[in-house]
Amino acid sequence: MKKYISVSAAVILLVNSCGSSGNTNYPVRKPVLKPSITGSSTTSAAQVEREYQALIKTYKSETSEVLTYLLNDSSNDSRTAITVENNSRCNMVLTISGNNYFKKVPIAANKIGAVLVPKNQNYNLSGMICDAVYQKTKFITGPYEVKLSN
View: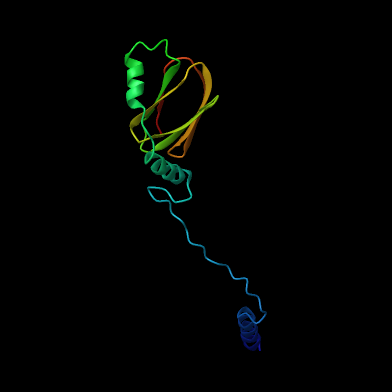
């Protein structure tokens, strides 16, 4: 008799678990996303890389003007130089904004970017380098140099 009751209970549980109740809320397996070396298309580093690639196509480098400024006595010039050394494995886009001044400077991995800006102003310098954020506000009166690494 015990054998008959346990077999009956097993059959009832089996029938109930087959979905006769109309419950269709089964767990759904979601794919596991593994980050690639270059980053997925939704990461901040990937967004910066896309912005860098788009900007580099139209950007006009000011390297020769900056070198001329730095090598000559330019103390009477109304502009000064900002140089940023990117010592990382990632490309970056440096945003420089100040009073009536805004510029985005693409800086390749292990390269230096330079720009001339008006003197005696506050500037916000910001960018992302390998998923790390750089942000600085600085009153620029003369040549200013920044070295960044990850």
